[in-house]
Length: 155
Image (cartoon, rainbow, N blue to C red):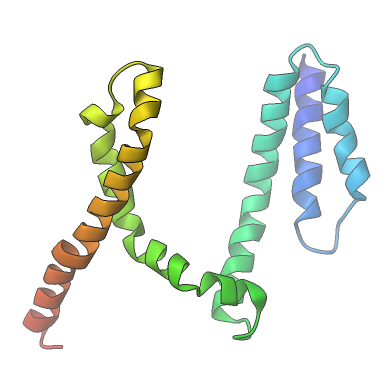
């Protein structure tokens, strides 16, 4: 089983390198071979999941640095910068902390009780309540204290 785990990790790392710096790349089909071999393993779902996690963790630094580079140092016409500057994504960024806090609170509410079918039936209401409360919190509660802080600081 250890050999299969090593193959899953190696395959994930190869895929992560595909999205890394241009200095080290392999052909995409070569990076796909370990994943295809995992289909014949005793636990293909588990090992495929491990492959994906290794890929995800390995590629995140490149994704993050690309986003930072495009927003801070990229030209205003760069497609990634234009996409990240859309009104919708600016709004999501503005309320993101409130989404995090409100979601955590609502998970402990009646919206997340019941069996699986009941939870899924409540899911649209859960999502709407999370976004609605995050919007209200950001626009009114947080905005009030930001204005108060600026007034007290003399800005």
